[in-house]
Image (cartoon, rainbow, N blue to C red):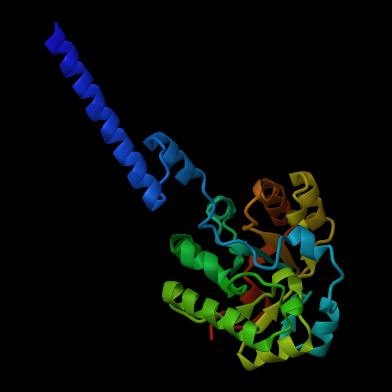
Length: 286
């Protein structure tokens, strides 16, 4: 009996020593002591690797005063800056900004496939690098890809030509590695530009696409309101602004739902969906 008690005590002492050794080792190396299920849960819920919008959310920036009205830039640079196509045909272009976003882009692509609609996606270089498989899907399904900078800065706040060049060229290179061509289409984050930035983009052989119909989907209104923002302002030659990407806590679910109202309604009205390059009769690659 005494021998069994002694053995039991020795086993307990051994287990205690083993545990204390692990604790000391973990503390010395900064390793958290969590069970596997907890660690998996933390990893699954982590958004640290998701490239966020450097300039801030659309909500915070778009509500500020626009630095230079897009219509003024179009008037000053009619061969570089475009807001819409010609009105002599019932062609319109559906565009999406801030992707690729694994939370929403694939579902938007599913909707476009359902209605056989081509679109133009202005992609962030940082997110293209993180999710190249989505970029490949966009290309393979017949959509056109444009440049939307690397980290989505407010180019007017930055007021730095060199930074603009770096953001654009880095994105161009990243996209080229995935899709095999250098983009000719560019859209500025938040639609914010001024004369010198437009002139620099022209030197870099870019055509700049603004928009004439804003869905305001970044406000995350109900799908019916997003759809109304588009349908009530539709016109031949329209370039429609929507978003397939969002900031970390943003949601584009209502954008997806609104597309099921917007697309069939416009098709019934006789509108033909084309890409921005087709609408403007300009190349999508350099």
